[in-house]
Length: 121
Image 1: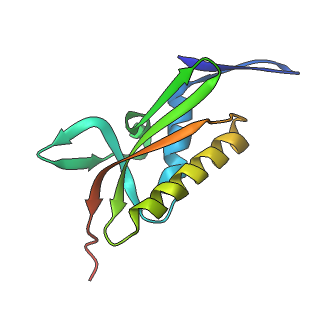
Image 2 (image 1 turned 60 degrees about the horizontal axis):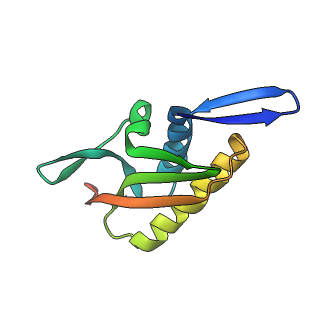
């Protein structure tokens, strides 16, 4: 699936994978995020951190009529307030998709797949 936009210059089609990559990039820039996790890969109770080129595996873009919904699977850093981190990710993803692609996102759902303890210390 993809998102179709009609502008004064013509027709633009944006694939869901592009939207996923942009959303994932915006999310990992937020404080408290260790990385993105795959939506369906939990082995031995440990979520694997996705690399930049695989962000689309941790983001699901759903379209229902004229509404755009994004589900994100993330790993947070130990010691951060999870509700604040999730809220920051939601705000950042909505803002980034609006500014870069011109998309209005109706909902950003956050699924915490794991908590990682820093090795510093």
